[in-house]
Structure formats: C-alpha cells, structure tokens
Image (cartoon, rainbow, N blue to C red; front, side, top):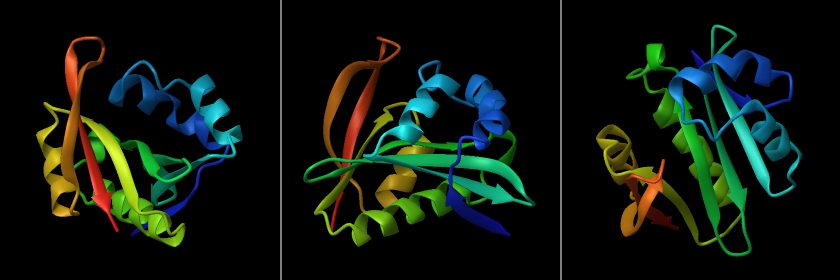
Length: 144
C-alpha cells in the first residue's frame, strides 16, 4: 500500500542516494533543505512498506501552483507511484483554489508526458535547452 505524507528534514538522508542516481544534479540535499524551509514550497514523500519510493513538490505563487518535481525510484517505476504523487499534488492545488497547476517536463520523457496528458495537462510552450543546457522542456498546465 502506498501512503503520502509531508517531507521532513529527516527524510533527506533516506532520499540522498535517489537524488544522485534517479535525478539531475540540481536537486541536492542542500537545495531540498532550503526548499523545506521556504514558506511557498511543499514537498511530499510516497512510502511503501515504510520506505520512501518517491517524492514530489510544489511552489505556490500568486496565481499559480508549480510542480517542481515528481521522482520515483528507478527500481519502483511502473507501480503507480508517480500517478499517486501527481494526484496528491492536484488535490492540494484544488484545495488552494488557484486556477492552474503548471510544470516543465523534459521533451524526451514520454512516460511523464503521457501521465500528465492523462490528467488533463495541456502543452503550453517550450523552454529551449532547459535541462543541462541541451534538452528542451515542455511547459504543461492543468486548468481547474
């Protein structure tokens, strides 16, 4: 069974290896420490058998909520973890009564794009060379 709860500073030790192996080099433990102290950020972990198998976060702006990341451990992919995290973020966004939820996704990440489209995200634009100065990002938004 999967459960989701807010991320705490103590979770960073457990996800440190996932950050190194399953994500880009921007999301370091020190960046997460700053994010967890940011009043506009909210991060969540997904647990399976008391182990963190994924995490996700949002930033709340004046009129929009932005998904900063959704990460599933590589060894746990295709088990619905990303879906559960995304649905949790959508629920949080709707509770805040803001009109939309936005994200960037690597144009080569076809499984993520399909997941977002399944949840009514629309392609709104592109950021050239957004990832590692060589891969484009697709901007996607879900309107409520």
